[in-house]
Image 1 (tube, rainbow, N blue to C red):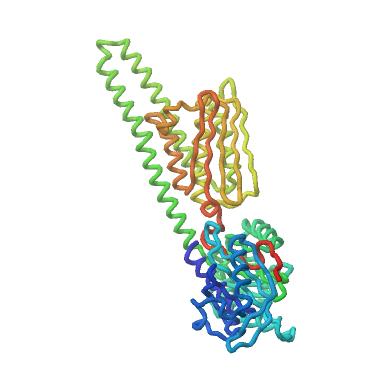
Image 2 (cartoon, rainbow, N blue to C red; image 1 turned 60 degrees about the vertical axis):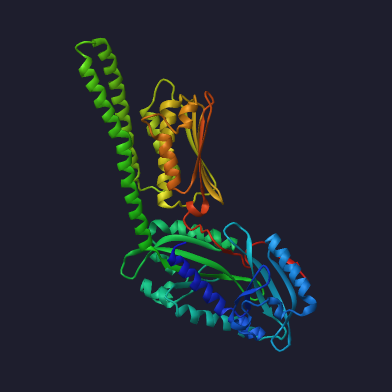
Length: 492
């Protein structure tokens, strides 16, 4: 997660915690308090300084402590949200009747590391209008005081509020932004994908994050990371979304610059490792032919034929290098289309008496890959297809692209003659760097490359990249799982 997104998430979380009318408390799985919201201070009478790092059982009646321990232990093991009605004790001894929701807070591996609870006091009836209006007013005041762009949407998905920072960024008035007016500033090519993504997430009532370009007041389109969280009222009823927008244009430009530098380094390495070495080898061969030509013409002829074959191979490698360089500048973000085009070009170029059947299949809903990862995936596919079309003598070559929830997966299979075990164990033939290069690219993409092949039984190459590294908007690290995630169970 970038510093900008982290700061925005912290600001958004702070706004939600500060504006909530219900007590928000977080504890370790052992029951030690780590978070104590302003509403918790008002509800239970303890300040944050008094209660943080102390046991939560301070506010639980002694007869209910064992039951509370068992409930927390059950949640930590199952990872499932729990709601129940119970008794809490204010500072001074007054008992409160509260409706509490417990949710797990997980780390990047899915292990529950803390328990988040939201408590609603219904000891005395509170006027309904105050319950509805007071937290909303405090939220908007908090949102207007932060430099992060914050917005909220109602049940229909249309915006009903944007803060001052959002208005200043776009240069628009509030009435121009509400409803779907804000969408007029989205870059036209990003508009459809943006709405499709938001609609899907909105219907599922889940947290979502995506990136798109938004027009600033000076007309410049800036890259934005948009993070949105579902909102629920005190009765657990879904009421819409609250979200933050952060300008990440500088980060995107830095990533693009890094990608360009890495590409130039790669080209320099490939020129040295393939073309220059090939031409150096050719020079040595020609020198040998020149030296033995007067005395051993037959041997010279044989070595000249070998040199010609090596020159042909060098031309193929040079052509592939130029094609890869040209492909890297392709505008399309459609990975399947780019790989299909590369395969069809190879099929036309390497066509012989038996042309293999070639197809590309996509499983799962396509998601945007990080540009650096997408480029490396395309290059790995191009190298693998080049090997298959040129050397495998296959009848069928197929590519499978899978957009899975936990990872991105690319598979390339052929039913050809397979790879020589010695070549496979050495990651390539001497003077040829295809397999080694694919493994290097997999490392650059933060992925794992595996190759299976048997003599006469074809070859399968699989690349996997964890979702947190592959997809734009997928984050590793702590995941807070409040009431709108998971399946609720009722406990009395």
